Structures are given as structure tokens and as C-alpha cells.
Image (cartoon, rainbow, N blue to C red; front, side):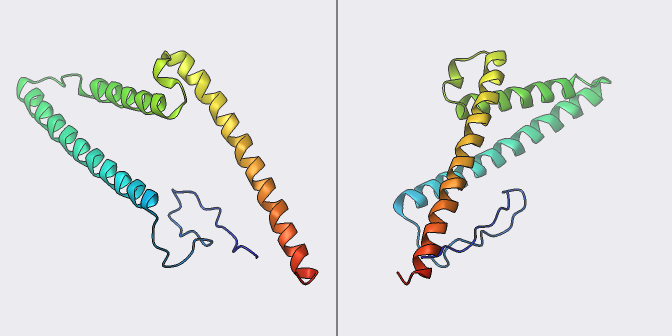
Length: 139
């Protein structure tokens, strides 16, 4: 059985996955994952809107007082902290690590994931080759 070629598009390209089956219903786990993903996106959007609202109120208050209130520093620190927390959730054991060690572990984790991806691609190519060979022999 030959599999359709899969798209190498990244999520930022927003291209459809060529190898994805059409009109396939989602399994319970896939549905739960999709709903959870949508809920997380909605809550992140709401949080961002609240953050913008607070920022505008601070800016208005600062403008009334004639100072900038250090808003840019607060925002950038909050953004960095948010990203560190996200990394701690993604990297195995990251919640127990300090920032320096977290970055080291993240680099190592990326290398491990790249190795796994390379191995999966090699296995996929191997099995696709077996399928092609099987078809040539009439099987």
C-alpha cells in the first residue's frame, strides 16, 4: 500500500497536509486534544486581551502623571517569564530546573528530538521501499 506523500510544510506555512485523509472522523482522543487546544487558544487570547487592557490603563495613568511607568520593562520581563514557564512544561523535568540548566536541557532535548525525527524518516522510507518492492513483485 503506497502512502500519499506528506507535506513538509511547517505550522507557520499554514498549508494543508497533503497526506491527510479526507473527511476522516476524529477519534475520541483526537477530538479531546483538538477541543483542549482550542480552549487553550481561547484562554490565551482572553489573557492577551486582558493584558492589553491593563497596559492601556497603565499607559493612561502614566501619561496623566507625566512618566512612562517602566511599562516596556515590565512587559518584556513578563513575556520572558511566560516563555520560561512554557519551556519548563515542554522539556522533560524542566519544572525542577533553574533557568541556566533549563536552557542547557532544552538544547539537548532539541538534539534528541531531531535524532528521533531523522530515525522516523529513515524507517518511513525503508517501509515505503518495501511496499514498492512488494507491488513490483505482484504482492
